[in-house]
Length: 193
Image 1 (cartoon, one colour):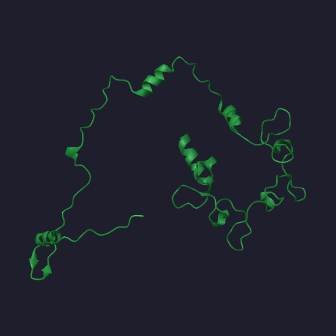
Image 2 (spheres, one colour; image 1 turned 90 degrees about the vertical axis):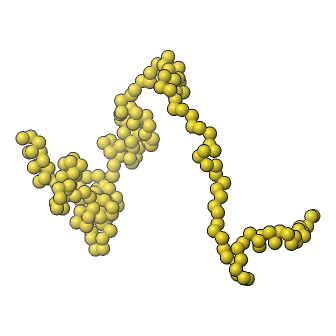
Image 3 (cartoon, one colour; image 1 turned 60 degrees about the horizontal axis):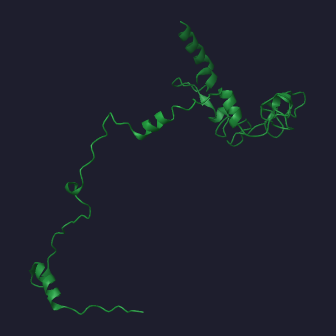
């Protein structure tokens, strides 16, 4: 293996470096640094190409006209497209295209679990109970036993939407255009007038 050896010291090089620095006795004074960029200046760059002439077609235009001989795509209804792309198991009842929940059936054909509360015909949300009987997620506020609507909070603790009218803190719904029921009535009456 080749070992590195330092070049022989040259007094001429040291003298040259020292002579380029201004001296005041034995104290050296720093000179201003000169910044040299490794990037070429704008003047050194080649000129920009002129913009494409409007009468020359772009590659996308050429490809588009080349494919015009093909038949246009047939469009399906939104329901057909959603069914085509939806995954998961389907209801086993003949003619039903809904998704299966439990027992291979959709909720219309008996695939839902009924609420455990005696005499309640509603479907269970969680823990075997419907919303009215305590199913669903509990509010995350301490000592609150209500059901969470959104963000883990019940209506009383800030879950769900609020009316878009300034200062109104009542519940709002998308079906009422994000107004509370009273402001939605006013909004509907003003639209009818």
